Image (cartoon, rainbow, N blue to C red; front, side):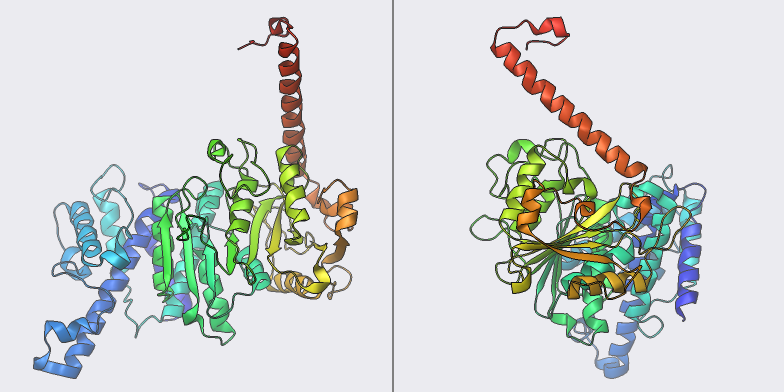
Length: 502
């Protein structure tokens, strides 16, 4: 089967749900069915291989050695999908049995979709989905893991296109992922951690980069945490389908309850920490951070968790080899108040290696201009007491809803990071290595335009204006609160200002 044929058939399966099921929910149903079809077809293939080798001497103990997953009797695709009554409930029961038979590897992997709820997925839609998957054989001789993994990525991208802004919860544009991975350069034997892993794209990309460069990817260890149950399940399926074995995806709130801990109780540390966290998260758990050791440079504002993710990731960076790459809204570069204090502290520790300005309108979830912050526990000698600024804002292809970065665009920005110079010449990525003294003179403002000429005029768009407006508004609110506090302490009746004294 060719890549095009597989993608076409997978999309036909998704389209079987169109109408009664919201496109934003396609992933909830399609991915578990795809995963079940894959492990079922693979199990049959493995059984046939075992029988071909041992014939009538084949017993359960010998056959178990051929199977990656255990499928109890009655849970194969062909045994369940032909049933004519309560099909959704039968599928849900089958998923439970498979998970229970593989507690270490598959517990919870199928998510929590309401398969028996015909209001959510009518039986006609479910039958259409089954008929579409019946046209695809997913055993290793028909579809390689490379082909299947690429097909999974194809579905993720299409589901993101269908979901619009909701896609930001589970999908990061692949060019941004490839850019981050290319900058951080994970190596064999290292550990890679994504604290907001979504559908697992960044973890998969690190493995793929090693494969494509001919290095041993099998020794790379992948870890991730994701707050959304369905999305965490999608991430696990994604890694399995890419034939990745050594990974650990945990569900939970990274900022309130980080799942990966060292024996000492501190957050576990990794060689590579990579993420695209939700931008400017409100109600993220600031009340718990005043005594949290991750608040290495201060507590972020209660209504904006950007620097909570940054500090968590820097705290998760292994001494010596550790490096961090995180996608952030550009507001983190210049906002005042508590964030300015944290920014000053991180720069003072000399762990911020680079600030990379991204093109506008790359993301599904926001039009606010974004950037990459690159941290390194041990910066190269020539970059100590400096920060590398890279303006990649002009490196994009304009699209209708979203802009794109081509492979050449991604390579140009990676090269600029690696060399510290604009190897592409005029129209490339503007670069400048700035000493910390100059940044201090600018009151630790990291706005890229302060240090190098910003290439893309479009970066000063509505998104930037909204960020600046929100910052100015918050500053006014903070200033008023401080003023009223002083007036109250002086015995002034605040009711004359229309403010409660409580």
